[in-house]
Image (tube, rainbow, N blue to C red):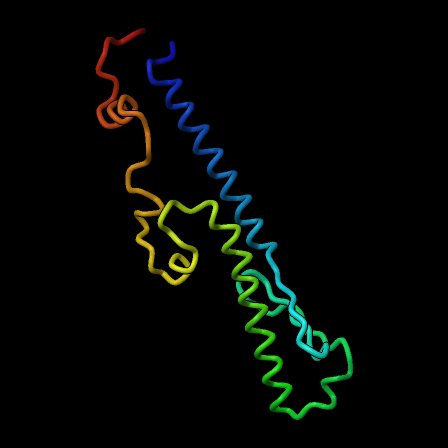
Length: 143
């Protein structure tokens, strides 16, 4: 015979399963985030992934051939920085809706967030379930 807290515990487990599924979907969306930036004059086109890793460098025109090495290097670095910034903005957009109030994506990514602000030490649950978890069933035994 089910105990008095079985339904509440099942509800909590279902909530946990939903949160795990949402976390997996968020991870997939982050991993799918890319940014492609093309420099002025179509000199270079750079694509980066969610972590800022370069996944493609293309030279859509022959404009790079007429550039001094320093000028080409500057264009590459500028385009790469812009692509990384845009990818980070994309990741921030995915994460922003998942974070608790007061926690920002830049603070999270730069390690300035207290883990307790994102994941409290004690999970949320009704007091009756908390008492059951902490002390076990204190009522009559049904056999």
